[in-house]
Image (cartoon, rainbow, N blue to C red; front, side, top):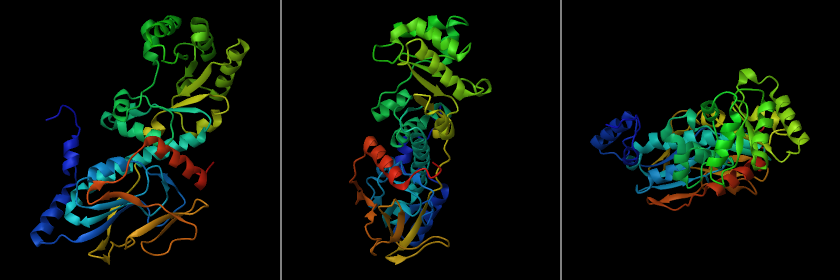
Length: 384
């Protein structure tokens, strides 16, 4: 037994990471000699709602289903959707039934994180925005959080192990713990020690709110590191912030007054799109944590919509295999597969698996570019 409460990858790959009723379903169908050819679709909403979310997790979903004797189609990762299927599976039901639980988990959680990441990206399009959120989630999903944050357009990640999984370098400089280890009044010693120890390519970003006023610590950091100082970070606890926008403006003013306008000011701690919109003209960058990593999973479901070539669906769901379209005005449209779509519309469903073979490549940067293009086209998020 593992020392940690983690389902191992081999259990996910084998289909054991499933709800028990799928095992009972398989036993029943096998006992009855039934294994129909079905079309099943993953959807959150049946019809477009105008409330867009960003699709992520398709890479994990594809690898989960790889090797099964099925065909699958999906929207490209990084596509905004507001209804209709995001993934479609065709094959004998028992060949994929036990994978539903893990499949929905891969898509639901990653899409939620990516959607919130895109919201933060759009809230401060000209700022550097970094993912600081993996400390809020189970460490086994850190790579999913960081990958989804990048798909949503964030500029960097902080989790070292996730960076190794994603072949991306994690970034970060110092926590309050470093300053506290040097003791009250010795912040300059901590900043200088960091400067001496860190590799030359590590940005010199001084955390400046541990013991005293932010302006005071920023000016002490400038004095300690001089021209080597790249940025300062303000992570002031909410109960001590007061008018945070005024504090950031004051820091920028005093840096400029002393000839250090080139020192960037980053802010972190409880950052969300609303606070980013308030600060984006006075702060140079943001570290975003819980707003992204703690996003509520998208409520995807997988439903059979055809059985042996005939339309079928549970009550309240739309039967028949469907096509998904994007029109030039950013609209998302759903129609029956094989029927004519809207004029000038782009069909969004693309092959993912053919007879179990993965036929799509995955690129984080391409998905992020897709997300930004869709966001422009669909004016996402609407509240902006």
